[in-house]
Amino acid sequence: MPPLPSPVVRAAKVPPAAAPSARLQAAVRAELKKKEDADEEFRIDSEEGQLSFQPLEGGHWLVSKLRWRGVYNAGSCARVVNERKPGQFEPVTDSTSDSSSGQCKLVTPGGAWDLPTRVTDVVKP
Image 1 (cartoon, rainbow, N blue to C red):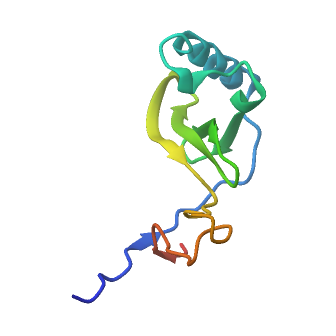
Image 2 (cartoon, helix red, strand yellow; image 1 turned 90 degrees about the horizontal axis):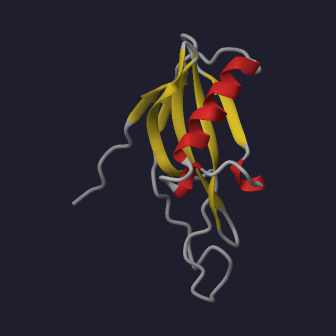
């Protein structure tokens, strides 16, 4: 059976880089602090707990923080937050990663070959 074609993703216009307001940062930190006791992924009281804010459109922000770290890579959890309602999070993922070394299996870093985990064709706006 031949492989399926790569899915096509239409890239959205990304707003220029901006810093989140102090009000938004404080509200997000306060909300996450409430959740710390219930869920370890929300701990923000350590170096790994540093929050990253990326602007989206319409007053929304992508908030992420380191969730796990391995020898060769790391993963973050990500949530979307509305600046008008910073206490309400929309989950995106509990483990996003910007690098993958595959399985080492004591052969070579990254394993014997590179097998992509997700392939897409991105169409610019």
